[in-house]
Image (tube, rainbow, N blue to C red; front, side, top):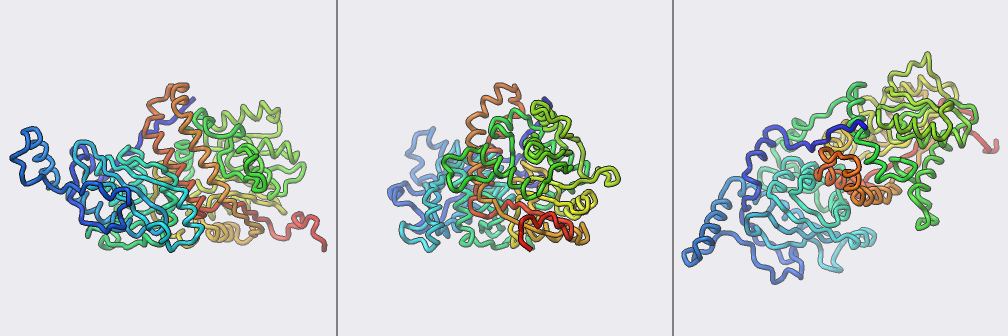
Length: 546
């Protein structure tokens, strides 16, 4: 097995150097201002007040305690502690706006007394002005944040949602009910923490975190207090996007999918399908993930309207499940493209075991490298591969699809989508998923897909059908996360790849699953199946009476 090293990236650039120079990231933060009683939970009524500075009767304390108090006083006066305290205070002011659910925050930085007493943010019972559905969703979440390093606050200031995810990945913050937190407050897909030099932090919905953050997005309104959008400038300078050229696409795909088939097999169902399923809503409790995945595969194959004898192009092989099912179900032949060596190896093995090697050919090739003079297809099917294309290459994808399709051809695709209202801002910035999970990743909006299809095909590919299956993704992501965590240690032991599957890797993927789960559970993200067809395709009329 060829697995790629996956060492978590530490902060880079000038800001990253500042993190590296911090003395253990444990300095005490500046004193907190007094907060309203509604910011504290009733269970904390007798909690000790925040410790601001050493008591005036230091001289009466034992020598060891006096030394500790002196060290704490010096730490509290350091520039680092002052900055962390300002950021923390600003964040608390924004969290005081929480109108749905409750978020508990505890300071537990090793090596110093707590900088503040445990705080709970949220409305008192029965006072929320949010919708009944939002309140009910929030009541299922009881998130708690334990801060283990003051670096956490500075990451929020400099790197927004990415900073929150990195703090979790590096163990600087511990979260109880991570998926619930991400839903209650921002949204992963789009939790953006804006910290400004005046000491204000604002949570803003941008590509995802949790349920509480998602449900409270309207109350955590964004205010761009950094001069001239300095926060966005820092983000773009440190995390500049890399275009998905053929070479870069190869690297980006291998960086994710060549992490090891054993790792993916540990959390996927037996079909080895790594995309949104479709659950049986009439009988959800009796449905298995494998059944739901095949239901999705059947839906996209039916949408492609495949006939016996058709030659089908699959862009994005995965581990072969769709190609195998297409041949078995529709008596067609399939040419499948992948850029992952690990996926191709296992897909070829599974196809051979199914006795279909003579009907399915898997090529290690970019879709742009297929010559239309040599390859033409009746149908093209692609499931959650367009996320790796990039915004600048969407028209190129549709131009190539148009060139490869025969007259009367159909393109059926499934892709994760971003809401149109947030799409422009999303494309302009880097988030946790793009930086740490899917390098070069991009979720288009539905209108961006239609526009790219029109531009790329010169109007020859006509949008014919669209259905959103996004909410079905939330349960699958939860199951993946639970299985991943449950079987992670076994994968490390079985593969001997402890240098790759590190504790940081484990927390990174846990955050990724929870981040995405919240985005789909809140309908902040979509996942659509679409059909494009050549003009005047009478084959799609079917049994419609004329």
